[in-house]
Image (cartoon, rainbow, N blue to C red):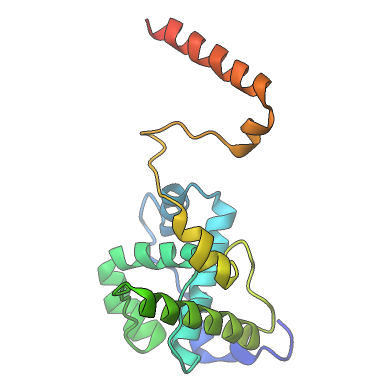
Length: 189
């Protein structure tokens, strides 16, 4: 961090940076669970956790309501399921205050409010951390509230997911898929 990012010397940031979510003796760590549940690799999950901590820092210091990115929100949702850790250690000992997660009430007014809040969050992020937020974790406001909400969460155990790159292969890709399915059907029956 540059000299313009004094957040790293604050007691709050020092507590956040040192904090490990969840029990240390768990067979499946918080980071591993976050990666598994979102189909992320371990390195990406670790980056999301770092950004979640930055979001929490902003929630305590920005002076306005903040809105997380979808990835950060996934970390927050999972952290809330570690309820004893979240409410007994994280909020009182690390943040020094409660940090509640409230869903939208819906409607155009709420959409506009969260759109504006997210834009303000991105601006506060850059001002506080002296760098823009990583776009792969914090997409711009138009994507966050335009394209991304059209996404769907699916359980890959229930469906077959084809990468868009597969479609680029054109007819050859579809023929290859047909061959694979025929072989699988032949093996099963």
